[in-house]
Image (cartoon, rainbow, N blue to C red; front, side, top):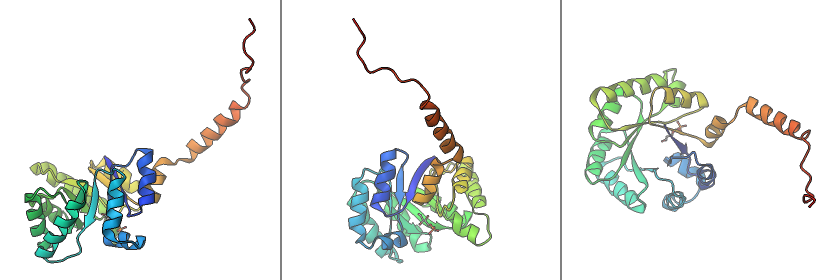
Length: 222
Ligand code: E4P
């Protein structure tokens, strides 16, 4: 499963990219607003890190507007995936952008039928928002399970990108269901690494190591 960071912070992206576990980045208008810098400047910097997949969202709500923004964003860098919202206009724009060879991530997906439509217009990624469904007392992971089943049934190539991830159990469940990608905030990705028994075990090994007699640094006598 691919792991994406859900952030527009170039600093966070660089940090995780160095570790070697990062496969991509998703941004949205809210995440970009937090950075307080122009969108395209931020996108260029993210792409320059070397990230192979960077999702950038259009803000137009009509088809011509989405097409113009999508084409412009896609020209910024070969790593860009254009994000379109799950609306009738978004579906139409996705179909056209895909015909032009532009990769598209359909976002704000909250039902399996919406995911079916995203696949029918050839979306590269479909982004079900798991955490926001959980917030509404609806099991977000049930949606991922349904999408996986539908896509398998018909051999759709659209990749399932589990979004709105709030904690490590979301990542674990997404992986068990065979989701292609999970995108998560930095704090969640950091928690994937951590375990108190790892810290305890390491501390004990290092303490015991102090008791091991060290080699003499003097050169051997001839
Ligand atoms: C990513 O593509 C989504 O925009 C993001 O995961 C939404 O997360 P949120 O529900 O925490 O805002």
